[in-house]
Image (cartoon, rainbow, N blue to C red; front, side, top):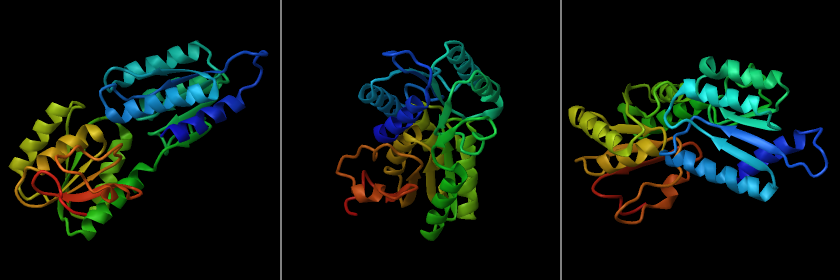
Length: 270
């Protein structure tokens, strides 16, 4: 994570011109990720580390919850501050597009990360760092179909994030079976309870796809206590769920997803 963030900030720093001698490059990063989400904690740590290694000044900003109005305000404030570069995530181009285009018109180099692969070019963003969401979801669905799954659930912890909607759509198309969308809040306890209630009401479900650590660990802990076998995958996962016994790391090295079966507390072999 820190490696590609270093490259990203380095590209922005190289693209800056007109700075006075000895003047430090200043970059603002605005994402939609809540502080409670372990995925975005890793991103912020990577930003901080890259800034330190490159000797540039970076300010990381994000709304307290998944809030597109607030995120647009943060981008507007960043543009007004006239940084040398701007990094943004684009979970909703309709809500954020005007603010991002204002940065482009102001002559601020803009790079997008995570969400926005399908819209960054038309907004004038220089480049995007992230996966194609639909393709990633479809790959997960195809893998589950190969494992014999016919009925599954896609756990969405950020309703309104177009990228997550695309992952679930790709997952359903790749699986070719019945896929339900379960909306949960970005809170571990509430997500665990929602997933537990859903699986209890739908014992026919054979597969679970989560879209980040906020959904992954609660889902894993729930399916590990459920009778029978359930296929489990997550897009993305910063680290395997914590288990009472060591988790076979090789299970989590697939290029597009992390997939395994779970029964009891944790799998005991690879």
